[in-house]
Length: 159
Image (cartoon, rainbow, N blue to C red; front, side, top):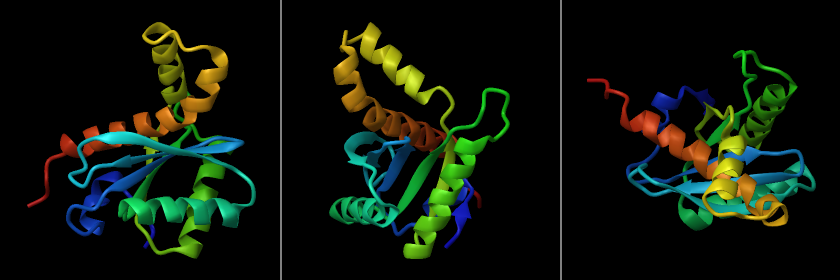
């Protein structure tokens, strides 16, 4: 497999196979999972980064436990649409994952995902800074995956 366009991702999966969504932070990886119909994303877990192989194995274990067959990785594009070092890091993460396991991967523009999650946690739930730090990456992964699922739902199917 290779990195696919988002709209090609469902065709690369067996029917009713969930996806995981990833928010790649400097110290953590937020993980979310979809349902089998690729309709709803839910927060799953936070992986604290150690070594890449250990992180990948933890991610693969989560995928296997949920029957997930592919992933959507948040791509931290700059506000002007250019790709900087964080995008390069996300793309390198995908290449390294593909060296370990042949799975379909797509990217989703994650601009402002963490900001949107933080705003929601503060404005709607009055969550303090410490608690936000514990959940923001997981919820950002959910926000990323849900955005990708919405895009898939509103993309005309090829005939």
